[in-house]
Every structure is written in C-alpha cells, then in structure tokens.
Length: 357
Image (cartoon, one colour):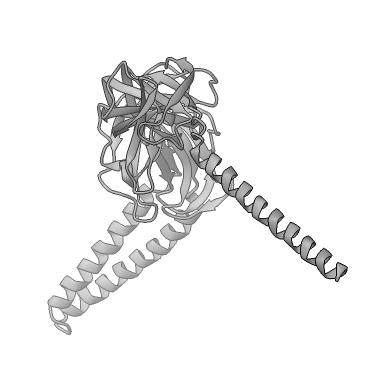
C-alpha cells in the first residue's frame, strides 16, 4: 500500500514538472516575439564623384614596317651570271648596272646554226631560180624560196645584234634587300635575280579586324610605337586603305605613314593606337560603378541621404578604366564604386571613403 502511494506521488511530481517546463518555453517564446528586431547594419561603400572629361574609343593593333614599292629584277634571257656588282644593303641609282648575263657561248652556237640555215636557203634559191628559167617549175616557187631566204637572213642579223652579254640595270633608285644569285649561276628567262625596295615607300602595314574595318577613315589620329625606339611615340596618318577584306583572315589591310622623322628598316615591329571616336565633354565614372544585371541591364547606385539609389544607365565609350554615361547619372553625383554588388534600391549605406577620378 505504501509503495503504491509513493509511485502515485512520483508520477504527480513528474507531470507537474512537465507542465511547468512547457509554460516556461511558451513564456520565453512570447518574450522573444514581443522583443523588437535588432537594427540592420548599414552597408559600407566607397563613392566617387561623376565628372566631365574627354574620352576616346581606341583600337590597339600590331603591324610591321614594309615597303610598298619593291622590284624583283629578273633575267630577260638564259645564261650564266657574270659581273655581279651589288650586295644586300647597297644603295643603287636608277639605270645602274647590277649584273650581267653571259650570252656569248650560247649565241655563238645559235649564230653558227643560223649561218648554215642561211647558206642552205641561198643554195635552194639559186637551184629554184635555174629551174624556173628552164620552165621546169612555176614562178611562184621562186617567190616562196625568196621569202624563206629573207627570213633566214633576218634571224641571223637579229642573233648577231644580241651577241654581247645582257646587262641587268636598276629600274629606279633604291636599296638592295636581297641578292638571290652568285657569279657563275646559270639562270633562265624571268628568273628573279635581285630584290630592290624604295626606302621612301616604307609604311607600317597592319590588319584591321572585320568588326572595326568599316570605322577606319583617312583622317583618324594614329600613334605608333616601335620596339626599336623604346619610349618614343610617333604620329602617323593613313596613306592606303584596302577596299576589301582578306577572305582567309577576314581582316582589312591598312598602310600607315609615320610623319615624324625616324630611320626605319623593313621588318620592324610596330604597335598602333587608332582613335576611332572621341568625346570632348563626356560624363564619366569608373567602370566599377556600372553593374550588369542577370537580365542584361546596366545599373549604377548613387549615394544620396545615407541610402543607395538605383539608376538604370546607358553607357558609351570605355577607356582606361573609365566609362561614359549617356543617361542615368549626372556630373557631380556620388556614384558607388565599391560595395555595390549586393545593394538594392533604398539600402542604407555608410560611406567609408570618397574619391575623385
């Protein structure tokens, strides 16, 4: 009996404890719900003032120095090369002797054959002439024989006139860039012998990508730097713009003439900066101020009265870490350039640094 009472008493104590615990949890939850939420921490940002300044769209290209006036001097006849007078790097004048093509040996054999042919035609003419007088052949046969005789005689005269060695002359004043033969080499007709270029025709030749090819104009400002002259910047102008795209590379060839005095050599490596477009008084901000949304819109945040104000913007030229704002931001406004990745319109902000461009 005693044991039964003890068990009942213990069970009551357990139930009472559970009730008290549940009521405590409920009271704690009610207190939490009644307590005000902690204040949100302001987002720390850095701002820069939008300013007005000049900005330009440029195109960076690479090219090489090449002559546009170049001649491949060839042999007009076959024969051995003799009397080679020039080497690479030599300057020559127009009409100057470069080398000779020896022709005497070959011509001697040809003249001997032509003399024999002429003698044969002379004998044939005399024989036919006697037969025509004897009325054994018609007179027309004598006319044919005479024509063959005159033909053989003219061939012999022409060969004798060209018995001397053939002289290869420079077509105009220039610099010898390549000598492709040596004395004693036997060459055939139209074989390239010597290459000459005009140093006054040296230009920087570059390939312009298709996307920018239509924007190239003759009056574009161009700056050129050469690895051979470190630190120097030369001004240049467009002298030739090819009217088509290379079908293999889809590029347009551009030739640029350096205006400043400089000693150029073919093959020099050049870097060009072409100014495709320029705005003298544009609203510009750092490029970090503009964010592209997942939907492709461009936005910027303005710092105003302790809050971030979202603006959709229209942009223009990008250059040197800056971007032109066509619409959405005015000069003098403070644009957020750091800490703007997770901002929304109206977010409270704390400016931790303000700079100028």
